[in-house]
Length: 383
Ligand SMILES: *Cc1c(COP(=O)(O)O)cnc(C)c1O
Image (cartoon, rainbow, N blue to C red):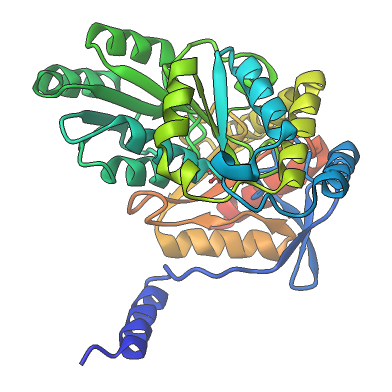
């Protein structure tokens, strides 16, 4: 007999034995990159609020005002009555930031990736995605009956080999990568990928979820499809696709994750609008977050040159340990010292590449990073 409770508890025992069970822990965000959890105040290097906008006064004021004017929920999908003036304004602003003709906002970045890929690709098509692509890119690529191939992470030769070998067997081809990889903080050569796509009659899609530069400054390469999130640096909620007017019109008519779900609450849309405005006006925020990470990388390479910090060039810096157990141990140690740095384990990252993922923000101060590094140095000199 298939006893559900029995199957669940067997599986949970297995997950716990491998240190792969996951929990939700109530956390409250405080000022200056601190959080409070289990009654303790911790300095967090695990939040995606890279630009310190989550508690920003003008953002909160804009959200409150939208609540008063439009009410709590949007109460229908975008295509019925869920759209409003704020949505139009937000989409126009995103198109302006991305230098595209148009943009459309989805309920989340996850839904945006799934929506656009399933709208565009079908059974006669080929999707080629970076091996380390985010789960929602992979889920989105598995949903339509298209063929999915993966190229080695940030490896242009691997991409060229796959595209040369397989492109001709399919009608359309979509190449997908990320501007900044979420668990490694590294960046591909987007210009070269664009050239490969053009040579092989393929479309290029880039996920900018963790890229601060494109929000504050300008994306240097223009992919056919730009994807981004409003849930991380923008500190609100939602995801977007930006591109040509035809692309956006087509998505609005066909994307199931846009059509068959309720529009975001107006206060959330208002938060995004205000936050984007601040990001564009106060470019020091993006610069400071990136500088903080570079400062950390420099201290580590001077003092712990054998530590594997990957090829990060962004506000995300991994310290790759390998084993789940050792990674948890380091995370635990830092926790005792007052720092929150989450351990990232499979299946979020490949087996044997468990790591601590440090995310730096414009809220962190150099003195805080100095204190963190001191503990890391102490730990690795002892162990
Ligand atoms: C977080 C993330 C998403 C999903 O965005 P949400 O708005 O959180 O759903 C998509 N792609 C990448 C690379 C991400 O890191």
